[in-house]
Image (tube, rainbow, N blue to C red; front, top):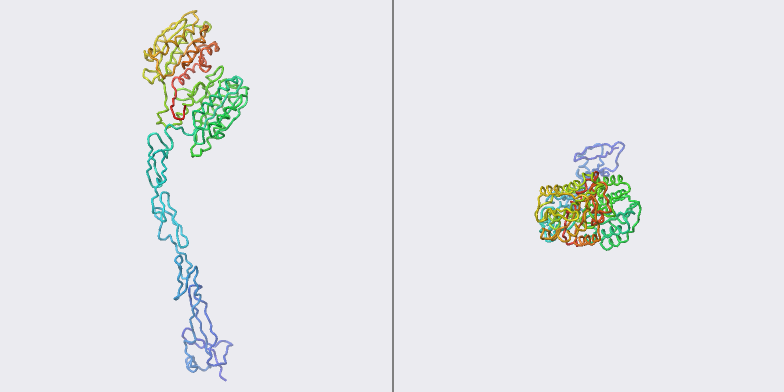
Length: 583
C-alpha cells in the first residue's frame, strides 16, 4: 500500500514536506489554504496564501504535479486586504486618495496648513482642519495680515486735531489750545481733581462763621465742573470728632452737591483738627487708589477751613506732617474765625517756594492756586499775578507797655522793612507790586507815592528815617480818611484793576472816634483790604480786629512768631484765572 504525503509548495519552490501525523487519501487534491496576516492595517495591503497537494510518497514534487495535471502556480496566491481609508479618503487604483487636509497611506496624517508660512508681517499661524488662522500683530489686519491697518480710520483726534498713522499707533497733532493724546483737553481745562474740605464746626467758630464756611464751599462749586471726569468734592466737618459728610464719589453734579452742602449742620464742640486731618488722609488714600472713568488718576487737594485754634496743637501738627507724607498735591489752610492763629495755619499748609498755602476765606485765591496746577503749563488764562498796590502805614505812636519789646518803635520799622525784603515782585513795571509809604499819628505823612517807584533799597532807607511821636495816640480815622480821599488816586500812581491793600504796622494804642466805622466801611466798600500787623508781646488783638478787614487780616508779630509776614506775600502775589468755567 502506497502512503500519500501532503506536498506543500512555498514561494514557487516545491518542497515535499511530510507533515507529522498528516496523511492524505485523495491523491491529487489540494489541501486547505494557509494565509499570512495582511501586510498593513489600512491603505491596501496583501495577504499571501499557499496550499499543499496530496501526492504519493514515492513521487517527487515535479512528477506529482505532472501526474496530477496541476500547475505550481495554483499552490500560492496573493490577495488584497485592508482596503480602508480614514477621514473621508477613498480607496481605488491600489491606494488611498485623501481629502486635501489629510495625507499619508491611510489618510491619517493631517496636513499642516502653516508650513507655507502664510501669515505676513509677524502674524502667528494657527493650523486648523483644511484651513489656518492668522493672529496679526497690532497694526495689521487681513486674512494673511497683509494689510497695514489705518489707525486714523476712526478719526480719533478731537477738536480739529490731525491724525498721523503709524504701524500699531497713531499720533494726534493738536491745534493751538488743546493737548493730551487725543487733543481732548483744552489747555485751560483742569485735569480731574479730588478736593477734600475740612470745615471747623467747633464752638470757637460760632454758627455764623460755620455758615460762612458752607457758603465758601458752595460758591467754590460754582467755579468748577463737578463730575466723574472733572472735579469731585468731599466734605469733612469736625469739632469733638471728625465726620465725613459725603465722600468724593457721592455727588456727580453741581446741583446735588450744593444741596448736600446746604444740609450740613453746625455741631459745636472742642476743636479736634488732628482728627479731621487724620480722616482727610483716609479719604485721600482711597482717592489715590481709584481711576476715573476716563482712565485718569485725579490729583488730590485738601482745604482746611479753621481759625487755627485747635485743642491739641501738637497732635494737629503731627497729623499735618502725616498727611504731607502722603504727598497730596496741595494742602491749603484757609483762615476764618473771631481770631486766627496764622502759625497753626502755616503748620497745616503746604509750603511752596515763595510762601505757605495760607489764604483768607474772603476770596478764591486758594481755588486759583490749585487750578493753576491742574491746567496745562501753556494756558495763558491762569497766571501768577503781582499787580497789587500796597500802602504801608506805620503808626508813629509807641505804646509805653511795649517800649522795650522789639525796641519799641524800631520794631515797627523792622517789621515793615522785613516785608519789603520779602516782596520779590516789588518793582516799577506794570505787572509788579507797587508800594506807597506813609506814617500817621494825629495826621498822615506821605514819604512815597506809587508813582515815585522807589527801589527796594530806597524804601528801606526811607523807612529807617521815619520818626515817632511821643504821647500822641494815633488817629486811625484820619489815616482811613486819607486812604479814602487820596491813597489810591491815579494821580499818585494808583492803578485800575490792581488789588488794593493797606498794611498798618502798630504796637497798639488807638483813638477810635465816632467817625471811625464810617471811614473804615468806605475803605472796605472800595475793595481795599486792611491788614493790621501788631508788633510786640502785649498787643490788644481786639483793637486790631476793629481795624482789619477780617480776623484773618490781623497778624501779631512777637519774638516767638516773627515768621508770619510772608503770609502777606500770598495776598499780594496771587494766582489769577480767567476761564470759561469760572464766573
